[in-house]
Image 1 (spheres, rainbow, N blue to C red):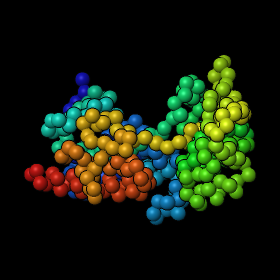
Image 2: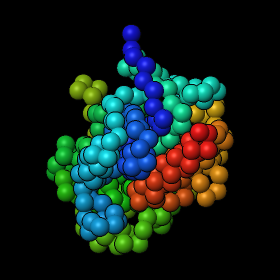
Image 3: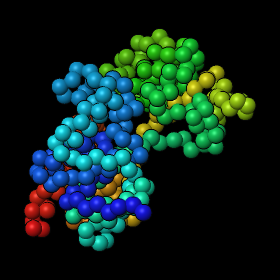
Length: 313
């Protein structure tokens, strides 16, 4: 039987938004509890070099998140390694239940659950997940030393993954449905100058092919989106980098969402459709999706929660 914990502010999620909310809520003497969730530290824990965090010319993503967690703890945030499986926003105080069996009640809630990697959605991709198919170059790139691999996508994530994977792979083929990338120009320049990377324009993956015993990827069948013609490309690894979807499953039936599941907040604030519930970071942001903007929203959410709680008192 789990225990029940009460807090003035419950923060759900532990990326830049969650940890920054913890710092500010602690400084406001709200004694927040932060529940880290399924991926402590968020997406930055699966990133290598971060070059756009103010104050650091370059910092490793996991290192930055370790520092943020330590900062929140030092300010007084209680950080708990649990996963919230249900959240009742119809009663006051709000009630959250964790996978651990613990129950958390809160006068205010800050949601900072972020976003998760999107997948292609094909059976062969699912079959080889963890056996050659990955959405995390920093997690799995090491296993492909001297091998040919493919990366799917055309945004910042895809280009960053392709560049990182050249540290290990003999060749990286970047597969994209169009003939131009959405990534920042500085990243595109690096990609086009890298002799190990070969873009394959106007193509998409039709099927991931491999061995049964042991289970492993050997190649991908790609299809030209204009002509329909297919070809096979040798590849021991397939890295899917086609963007992210907001992790809003917990609240999709209780909060107003838009733009494919992003939690809607009142313009210029972090207030959601339920008073006392605030949302910050990639969970709400379908435009910028940066660590620094997420941190800024985490600050806003804590300040919004502090003011809201003061009004209730």
